[in-house]
View 1: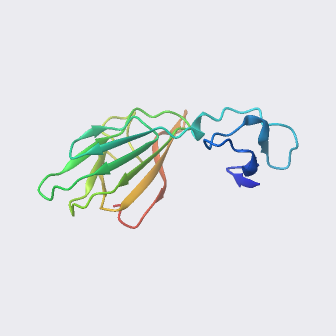
View 2: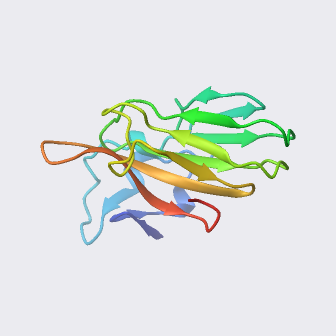
Length: 145
């Protein structure tokens, strides 16, 4: 059993495809099945190569072998509770740029670009409420600035 974000997950009960059977998820300290929406555990992904791209999926992998071009990924509108992971798997030494150019797409109150160097990545969490709307970085590697 593992605890993940306050949920106890009985790992032996995962299906062969790695899907989680909701009967085996419990809120920590509670023996009743969790009555929650687990949509954020779905891992949909996109691969992008040598092109600018719109970030739509939960996981975005970027690959580039061009050392003479800059590429940018554009964040979507903030969706409360959604997590987005962006990983730069390029062999290129030029960083990948991430942009949040409108109020509904900004990260950490910034309208600047975020640079992700080769072999590094960042994870964003969407927060949308009366006090704050934006993408917040929850984890990143040393090659993000």
